[in-house]
Figure (cartoon, rainbow, N blue to C red):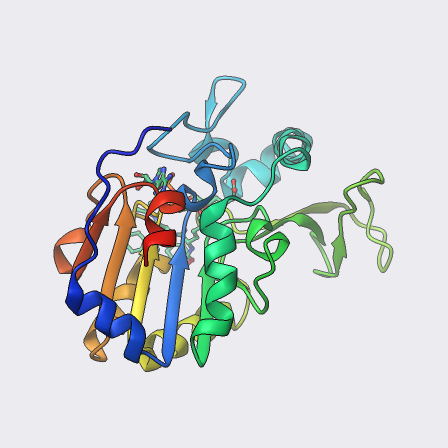
Length: 244
Ligand code: BJW
């Protein structure tokens, strides 16, 4: 992946980073792009499954229409993920836990790469590809990297589905509320590798900004959020974050 620009870090942002105690990091698919995970909409190969765009296969309607097809799509992606590792961006964000008094990592990604890099207490707004959930009783089950995934709920016997948030579905209970609280109290907010198109996640930088935080975007492309950010660092996350 080619870097567009190697940005100079403004002095004002450097001072913010030194002074900030409460920091929020919102990440999207772009943070995993340098690990080889396809993004959804830009900056690399887009996610398409057997000719079906991701917003069709990753939609609530598809679970009721064709659950086996949905599983096939997620099984394929989990298989791909098994060989992929966190990149410098994930590692740098994990290191920030020691740098700031309170760091909250909020991710839209379902790949688990932040946790693999050592980030603790990651708020997963869109769930995890490494969990299954019962379509009836909502019991959740981890999916192992080495064993075959469960198909049937051990609690009630009904079918399981991927524990991810598809279009038109509600976010996990409490996840957005926790993220919004962290946004409202942070002093510095990084928005890294997201197209800023999917709500309610894309509303978090606005909450931070309205509460007086400095907002900094890291992305090789401009997004609808860029104009309202205090700083826009143009480049790949794995190259920009180590400069901070
Ligand atoms: C790099 C890089 C590098 C590349 N370094 N950067 C308000 C207004 C309008 C609509 C809505 C609204 N509120 C809610 C909605 C409806 C809907 C929505 O937002 N629709 C919009 C698309 C119009 N939202 C929902 O349905 C949400 N639910 C909800 O709100 O419930 C209440 C409700 C229900 C019904 C109606 C109304 C309200 C749920 C959203 C769930 C999203 N699910 C997905 C799929 C997950 C499962 C799966 O993995 O398949 O989540 S969609 C997909 O998009 C995935 C992502 O998490 C999400 C965000 O994408 P992300 O991360 O931004 O990735 P990309 O690919 O878009 O962008 C990558 C970026 O990286 C680019 O900018 C690149 O430039 C950059 N990049 N390389 C740094 N190296």
